[in-house]
Length: 291
Image (cartoon, rainbow, N blue to C red; front, side, top):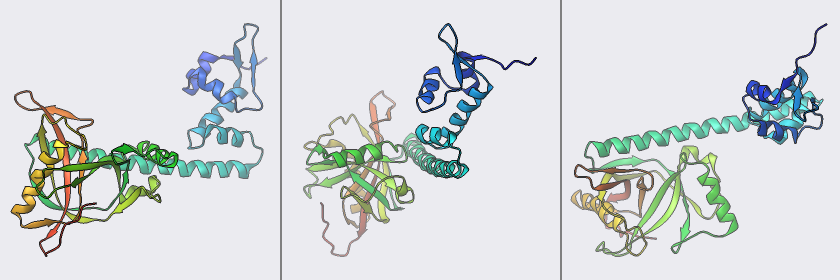
């Protein structure tokens, strides 16, 4: 007579590719648990219980939350199951979009590093696509309103599709005083991944910019009152603007890699890297404005 196989927790976890903690988590959402408990106190699974856990694993890996997956796999309604898969499909599609955006940003960082490796630090004119900008601090302090904190956390969760970016402001025309605004940027084409309809978020349209990769040696001062990175790095961009008879048309946006990537020069000095884009325009008598 054929006997149903009895499977222990260790083998069930191996079969499903999950941990025992995950099995116990699944069980919290299951009204009907199709396993037995042996005299030893250990769970004993059969083919029926394996199928139940597999269904839950399949649904949760299809983009559904565990709670929704458990509700769907225990429902007798086929329409409810289909609806759950449709919701899960949307989540997976969004995940694919996030991964595409992340790959795009990683590729950009590679380009910056290659330019640095080939002794870059040269500026040129380029068309910078539009992007959305979330300013994360105000008057030298991070935004603290609960809604603003939630927004920052949402954008942070989407790194590297969302990237770190400064808004640099020249306080005095002689370049002796700079300040900056910490924030995040996301390409216009990927803006659907985050919330943008918030007063702390603004759209920066596509524009003709001065852009380049700059080496800044031994600069560790990144405070609002003594921002040496801006004066050294952006100063080179401003020199290029003057040499080309161009004029600033707004603020400087500086995308930094220094917070996560450092290299050393030929004599062992620490070197930070940054990619700088500076909005500009041909001289037309326009007076630059800085917010």
